[in-house]
Image 1 (cartoon, rainbow, N blue to C red):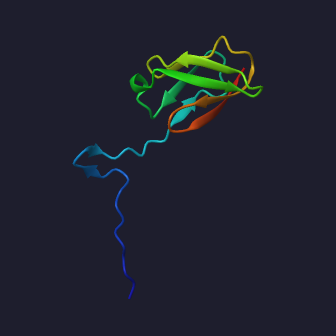
Image 2: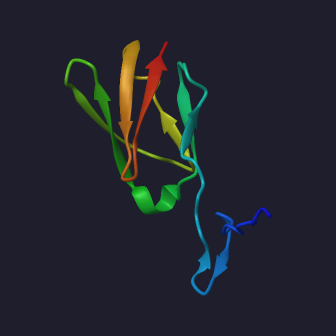
Image 3: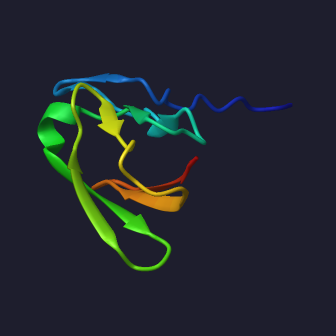
Amino acid sequence: GESLAILPSPYVKTTTGTVHSTEITIHPNPSSNELIVNGIDAKSLGNVEIHAMDGRVFRTKISDKTIDISRLPPGVFYLQLPEKTLRFVKQ
């Protein structure tokens, strides 16, 4: 007969709290004024870096999960977070 394996859920309660398997996302993308970052604790980050395709680096703060990108020139950028790098387009 067939055997059934029971696999642990990614949201298992542990003694230290809930295991985080939240995907980190940004929206809207493309954007002209601001990006909203989901899946991170913005208070623990402070400053983040935004890298331009030509090598320029912009440092900015995340304020309540929102990043002001209104002063960036139009183009493709990379938001550098501790866990991952996210690509976005500034219109």
